[in-house]
Image (cartoon, rainbow, N blue to C red; front, top):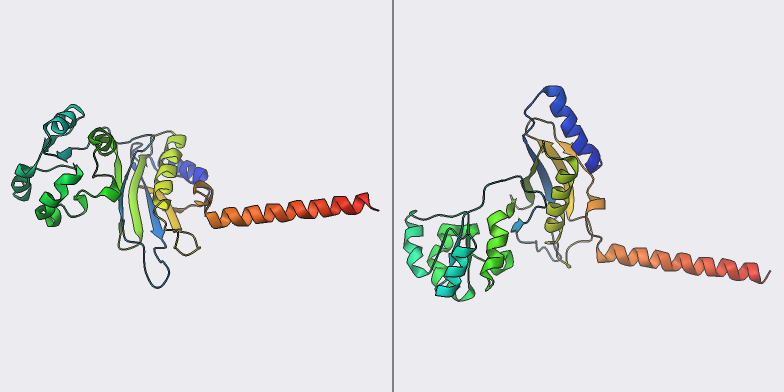
Amino acid sequence: MHRVADAVELLKAYRALDFTPEKQQVYIDLRLDMKLEKKRKVDPFVSTVHLPHPFNTQMNKVLVFTEDAEQARLAQENGAVMAGGAELIQPILDDEISADFYVAVPDMLPKLVPLKNKLRKKFPKSKRGSVGMNVAKMLDLFKTGHEYMVEDNCFVRTQIATLDMPSQHILDNLHTVLADVYSHRQQTANLGPFIERAIIASQTSEALWIQTEDLLPKTEEKKKKKKKKTNSELINSVNIINKVLYL
C-alpha cells in the first residue's frame, strides 16, 4: 500500500525507466461499499466535476433544452452547441443531432420523456446538476467538466490526469475526484469506509494500491469519536492537576 504522493512519483519513475510516452493517461480504479441498512444499496451514480487542472483541452459539446427565447440566446452566448425545444427531439432520435451533455430547464422535462431510452444516463436530471434555471452555470460545469460513473454496481474507473503534468496537479485532481465520490456516501450507509480500495496506474505501468484516508473528508462518526477522546483527555488532565494541587 502506497502513500498517494509516493505512488505518483513511482509512476513517473517507471515511465522514465521504460522509456514510455511521457504524455500518457493516469487512471484511478475505486471499489465502493454501496451497501445501506436493511439490504438496500446506494444507487449507481454518474457525476461531473470541475478538475482544478484539466487534462482535456477540448470543450465538451452541450445542448440546452429550452423554449424560452432569452434563455436560448443566453445559452448560445455561453457556448452551447445548440439550444431549442421539442423540435430537437426527433432529430436526436434519428441521430441527426448529438452532444456530449444535455441540460434542460425544469419545464422542458415532461416534453423530453421520448428521449429517456435514447439518452439514458445523459438524460437531464436535477441530481446531476443538468436541470435548472441557471443555464450559464450548467454550461460552465458541463463544457469543461469531467464525467465519471459507477460501473458494475460498485466500481469507478476514470482518468484523472496525464503523466507529464506536475505531481501536485495530479494529486489535486485525484483529491477532487475522491472528494466528489465520497459526497455520494449516504448518512445511512455502513460506518465502514465508502471507498474500500483505490488503485492508481498509468497506461503502461503496473497498478499501485494507494491509501486514501488522508484525502477524504472525516465522517461525523469519526469527528464525534475524536471529540469524545479529546474531552476524555481534557478531563484526565484536570484530574491529574487537581491531585497534584491537593497533595
